[in-house]
Amino acid sequence: MSPRDKERAKKLRHSVKHYQSKEGTLRGLATTRHLDTLVEQFIDSLRRVEFAHYIRDGRHDPARMDPTSDMFDPLRAAVLRYRRGEYDEAWWLVFLGTHFGKHAVDGWRLTRDVYGRLGQGGAWDWATISRDPSMFRTWLAANEATLRGADGVSRRFSNHRKYESLKASSKKGVSAVIESYVRWVAPHGTHSNIVRELHKSVGQDPNVLFAALYKSMDSVQRFGRLGKFDFLAMLGKLGIAPVDPGSTFLKGATGPLAGARQLYTGDPKAKITAKILEAKLIEFGKETGLGAQVLEDALCNWQKSPDKYIRFKG
Image (cartoon, rainbow, N blue to C red; front, side):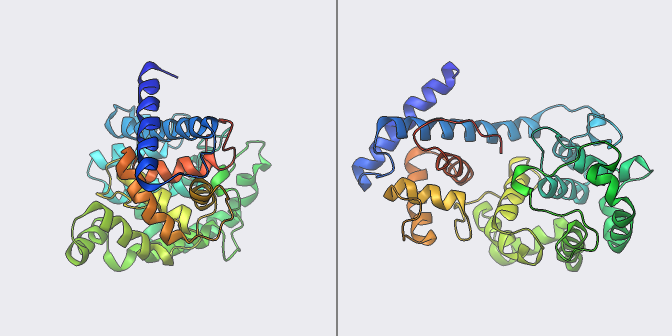
């Protein structure tokens, strides 16, 4: 742990203890080892947020936008597109990056080869996909075997998206997901219009706007609680959309909800509602200075091994 992180860890331990002095003992922190492990997960989660900010602010090679290049990266590409004023493409790249995820071994290869049409010419960019998403289903059906590795190249979803399907005929596969996403955007014309219209109805508070977008995305298939949270949070971290989660959105969660229950009761299966825990975590965040993204991520990882630190890559 770097000197900076050691100092942050010291402050976090102090703030957690101060929170307990006001709100009562956190039964999940039964030993110093439990607290130290949780703090290390907080540090890891803070680093992940900071890395997204590094991408947001950094200088990137234009090859990051090129799906025929080994350098392709949908998040860096999204930042570059956003800087060019190509807002729809920026949102679309973040969506694809969220849906397929970055595999621990394969990296962004699946996103790259879908977006870049396996190097066959052109790309499944927003202008093309939004014009007629059914064309993508036809292309996927013809190239499904290759994307599954028939050519000897491994292309896998990330761990968070490992139950997703490349089957073109599936009602829950990537074609259906993309078609539902296009239908979500279509009534508004552009992604920017979605934000403008919500600003008129709910105001410009980033927390409120996040919640409104989160609710509006219920129509996007296979983007449940985790998909919506990760997608919108990344848009905010990259500076592409003016949003920030004001809570951990625990309803429908698995790992984060178990982690919150573990923290407050010492039992990941305790009968305490997500709503109650969300309210408690808002106060916890105020005391510790930790945002909802950090709390959501850290608690999910901490509950897997609450008394022994394990580094998780997502």
